[in-house]
Each structure stands twice: as structure tokens, then as C-alpha cells.
Length: 367
Ligand SMILES: C[S@@+](CC[C@H](N)C(=O)[O-])C[C@H]1O[C@@H](n2cnc3c(N)ncnc32)[C@H](O)[C@@H]1O
Picture (cartoon, rainbow, N blue to C red):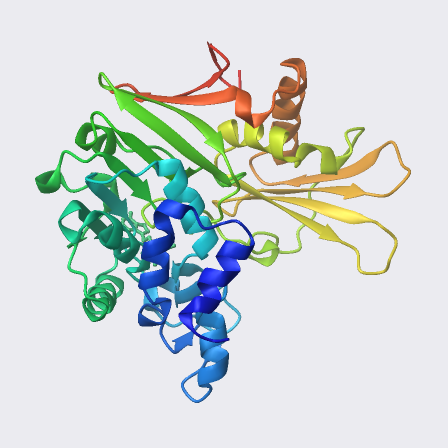
């Protein structure tokens, strides 16, 4: 079955299609939003394979490197996509959309999510902001072919879209490092849902309710969205940061895999906002692995060598920052706090910026 029903069926059989979104998902054909050429191949001459990709519950990357050619050997940074349908639905469920709501979407992408929203709420109640002009133009065409004309805006979604305010809901489809002031100002009595995080751990939804000039929220889920283009992360490949020079050697008794479990990684991400990690397993069956830390500014890196059945692990640190030392401090502080899970943390946003709480206390992870 390579019709739109295939996607509806795939979502329903996994219990991932909420009843309130069923009509929109069943009526809006994803094929109107997915190009025949995307990251993964040129399907112009292979309609069957294209339809299989279109109707799979999987993301389709529609733009790389902002639409500019990627030189040979360079990192292919994904910059636009049609998101995984079940993830879109998870996010829309968190958004708690009700009939009559006015919704602001950040990141129009292909326009598919704006089409679902338009189907459910009426196109007059939907505004979608996209930062990339070519992406937006294609989305507007896609939406027209599907019969929808929501308000579409070219601009930085961090500014929202004041002329359409107030909104009841703001949904962002790229990962944010903070919740911009414009959003809660333009949605003064409603809900905001956005992928949120820093370079170290970006896999959380922040769901915030706004009242009385303050947005209060919680963290959940494991979204994997592209970065807000105005606040991207650094290079994703080890070779972009490590150029063969030796670093400072030491040892640690902390097993490296322990620091990248979800809960400590979330906590560490609050203070190490500009560092990524990579866990690289040896391919010789030895069970050995190297945990890399890479600073977004490409000037510092660190490694910890994991060898099974050891109690001490070799560390190497290079550059102006001692990245392992920074991770270790955050990890030990997380331990000292009683190893709190992510669900005990909350986010408050007001005129003074954003703050993370642990239960009712404000936390300063670095301190
Ligand atoms: C995952 S895609 C969006 C998927 C889309 N909602 C759909 O249904 O196809 C993320 C989009 O966010 C856009 N984006 C990134 N940063 C942005 C920003 N600061 N303002 C507006 N759009 C942004 C990207 O250009 C990209 O098109």
C-alpha cells in the first residue's frame, strides 16, 4: 500500500494518532509536501520508492546547508525537513490545541504541519514563520496545492509575528536554546511547546504555560529537531575539531558512559551549553570505546578511553578549556544533588530571562 492510507495506518497501528488529529492527518496528503529529490536520493524516476518514503513515519530532509552546495568532504548540516509525523503529533498533543485556537508556528519547513493546523483550526487561525525564503516559497506552493492559505511570514521566528497576536498557542519546530521573549509576550495566556536544549543535550520538549507575564514549564520527550538557524551548534564531526595534536593526559575513575546517560547529560547541558559529545565504539569486538567532547568553537576537545573491567580510564584534554574537567564537575554536582531525573526540573521565563529550577529551587549547575 503506497497511498496516504499507509501513513494513517502506520500511525494508528502504533497508537500514535490522537483522535482529535485523525481527520487532519487522513485528509492532508503528505505527498503534496515532499519533493521528489531530497537527502537520500532522486526519486523522480522511481515513484514507488518515493511514495514509500513519503508515507513512512520517518523524517524527510528537504534541505542541507541552507540550500548552498556542500563542498566535498564537508559536514552536511540538515537545515529543513518534513518532520517525522509521529513526532509532529507528539508535539501537537503537548500543545493541547482546542477548536478556535489561534496558533503561531515557528519553522514552516514544507508546510505540512501548517496544513494539519489549518485543517483542524481553519487557516485564519494559523500563522507560520520561516527564516529561509526559498523554503518558505516552496511551502506556500505546497499549501496552496493542498488547498490551504494560512498566514505565512518570512522572518526570524524568534520575533514571532506581532501583527497576528495574541496567540493561544506557539509551537516551534526547530531546537531553541532559550524561549524568546516575543513568544510569551504574543501568547500571554496560552501554551508554548518547543524543542529545547544546548549543544550537549538538545533532546527535550519544553512545554510552558503563560500567565501573568511569566511562562512556567517542564521538560519531556526526546525530540531531535534541527537547530534554530540563528543559534546553531558547532561542527558535528570529530575531524572538524581534532587535528592530530596531543593533549594533556590524566586519568579518571568515572566510567565515561555514566556521564552521558540522559539525566546527567541533561543536567550537564545546563552549564556546558557549547560542547557536544560523541561515543565511538571500537569495531574490533573488544567493547572498548572513546568518549569525545568537542567545543563548538573548535578550539578544545577531550577524550576518555573506556576499557571494560577497568576502574581507571585515560583522559586527554586539548585547547584553552579542559572539557573533561568541566563535565566531571557538572556530573559530581548532579550526584551531590541526589541524581535528579529530568522530570524534576522546570523552566521559568520572564522579563529577566530563563531560569531552570530543580523542584522549587533555582539551580546554577556550574556553581
Ligand atoms: C524541522 S523543519 C520544520 C518542519 C515543518 N514544520 C514541516 O511541517 O515541514 C525546521 C524549520 O525551521 C526553520 N527555522 C530554523 N530556524 C528558524 C528561525 N529562527 N525562524 C524561523 N524558522 C526557522 C528551518 O529553516 C526549517 O525549515
